[in-house]
Image 1 (tube, rainbow, N blue to C red):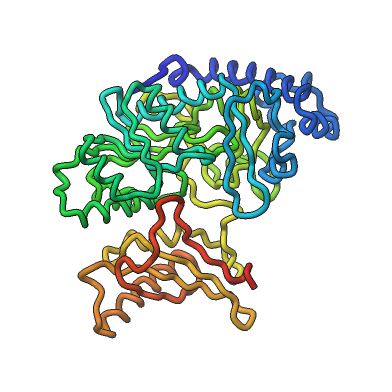
Image 2: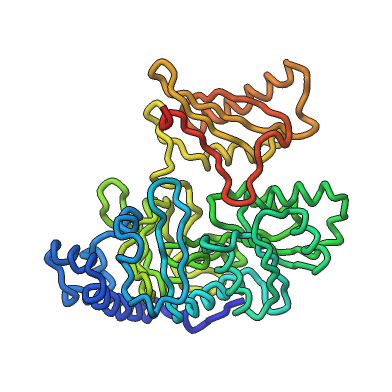
Length: 433
């Protein structure tokens, strides 16, 4: 289903014209309203008059998460605080959080965009959504919440932290859709199985998953265990929150809502714009945001872009799955390693659960990668020869994919800590020494 056909299916010519108009207005606004951008543009000898079409985006400065932290809390806001009606902030593992402000119009646009996503997943006003993203400063919970209400559906604001209650209310209220992180969806599936309640008594049919990278193999695992159709939703708080892009029924990339967000792919090394189809760092310019408009925000997410019209009829640019983050990439013995590569191998082998932990250390000046992975019930054994065979199997597969050897530690089912929010998969002891 298409929620907003006029915008989602507009011709490329009309879209570029709209994007160009909105880009010019945006640059004019931030130049006069945000000292940070005015200084950046003056240093580059740029004025708003230099921006005439979408192609001129390359003339503009980049924005990074560090810029938001350096201007904490409100230095990048483009409107007075009297016009800001809501604040969100990223938790941030280091340094100050990044603060995002929304005007009343920003919230209205956000709700409409999220409704577009939900409609693309085949849900409508007859659905009942159990929202298992965290509420509060994190954008996930409230972002989906208001999108569901805009769709006209029913929302159960479960948030995180009480899985038993989540299962009970999903069962008793007849929830048809679940919104949460992929790792929590797997955890929920395990917990539901333990209750002994037959899967047939649950009405869940759609899972809306995001906030962390996940693979196609993980999708298959979730769909099999929960008995749902699982879709990817993408967003980040600095740009808006969940709803920046979404899959459709064909699951062939995520449609970027590009009448509001102008995407680019750049080389993380040279910072030059890359052509469609080439993998690089995803960059967004917020074309319509009022509270915190951003020019060429570097997401650090690595993917490709596809401009071809989808079989669903949408003409929006599609982004591939996030293969990793340029700042989350592990460099081990000179080799670039992404956790998603390891996850894909694990999920491709029936003997292992989709729960793992990567421990990186340095011993005698040599990088060591340990992969801890749960063995499924039925495959875990006290027989040393059987465990050695499993160890050899996964070690060989990882070696062929990564190009380096890894130490494998096989552990019992349910021994790796589960997460109700974003899963923590990596412990890099090199940075702790």
